[in-house]
Image 1 (tube, rainbow, N blue to C red):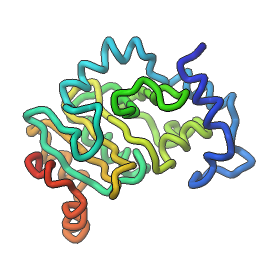
Image 2: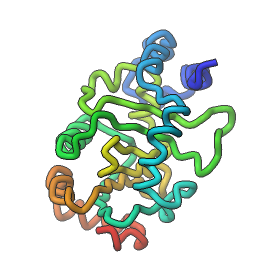
Image 3: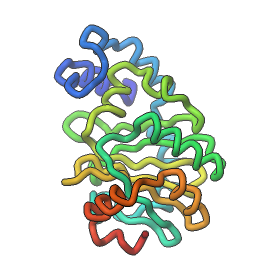
Length: 215
């Protein structure tokens, strides 16, 4: 059985349609969704072999959520308003940054807080080329909608360079996307994700005090 079989069965239900921009008539196309997962699902064996060591070199307390998730020494952060993993502008800003870190791929790993499954579902584990277009990212029918339009679940996002990462805290009381990067890339990420002074002060008010040491 494919590792993502349960996702095809579970999320094809119209119960998950709320919040999606996809018309009801298009929702639930398992053929499109399965082809997408065949292309972009990250097998657990590859994750454990190649990606978990990178993840461990970026994050600490990975079995927890905010405010306990932390970052290794040498990383700085830039917190942003959250709610979803990516929107198109956010993805394109991130891609501009990681041209400088020379990543070939990035992954999105669902945080199950140290569990292997939630209910019957294993975590989402996706691997994408660093230059993927927004249109391609959203081409997976209900799978793309669950990943990128559904304001639930929390995720680690990071690239093969190990020089940056994000923690997507959708389920935090005030959702945050915490972008982290090695200090030498701080000016690149901060410039690309720059927000107004008013918004920045609001975000700092949401940020748990435990993260001030990373600013």
